[in-house]
Length: 318
Image 1: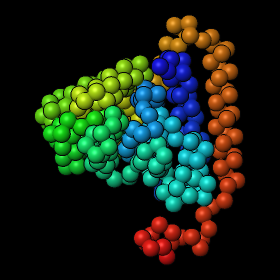
Image 2: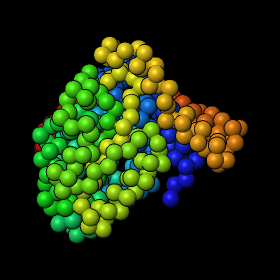
Image 3: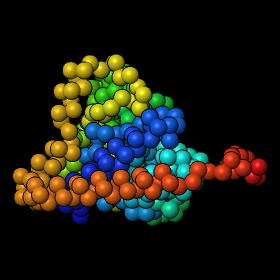
């Protein structure tokens, strides 16, 4: 079991990793949209330590923290985000399409599209391979109103598949508030309609996330069927880097950023006597230095060769 102090370290790694990625946007080392989950670290860190290599995780366009929680190599992940040939996918996938087949981790930029993939993994584990492996789908609140989400949840309920769905409800589907797009007050209350367990938790509380996720994984492994976890949170930055983010008031953003899960967890570690101020500061400095070293190394890696541009485009090669 990962301790609270260790989960705090995960959160610092996650925050520093994404802050480093932000450096590649104004320099145009990263092309297209970059979506960060700064402010949502407690959810990612809360999922760490409960999944095996044969458990699948299907993530979203906001995927970095989930990949870290699953154990994906951060050096290779950063290289992929910076579009280098040393990346997870050789620089062909980029930030929104991280994939590590050895850990059954995948991500997609299509909202809700990871749900059917996760159900496929869950079906394969239970019906075909007959193992106790589980599948996890992480989605945002914008995905819960898509047809793919409903169809996947319904099928998982019909077959009582080992599926855990984590809904990161950060209250905004790009610029649409959750309250304007949902007929129900919560997502969790919909779960019984799909013969699934449903629970709503504070996604800023890493221990609450860990408890709910652990229970859901154990339930799925032992044949208990699907669980939907709604974790409330707030993204500190715009939907993507470059988003003007005018749909949220400055007062709202400043007020909500005061509830920083990284700082909350740090205070909890200190108050419980799990580490001293000096110990945490030293650890934070070391992590920040390690991430910056990683960034400098990645920046020195080679870009994919132009003659390889058509790789992975056609089934039979070029």
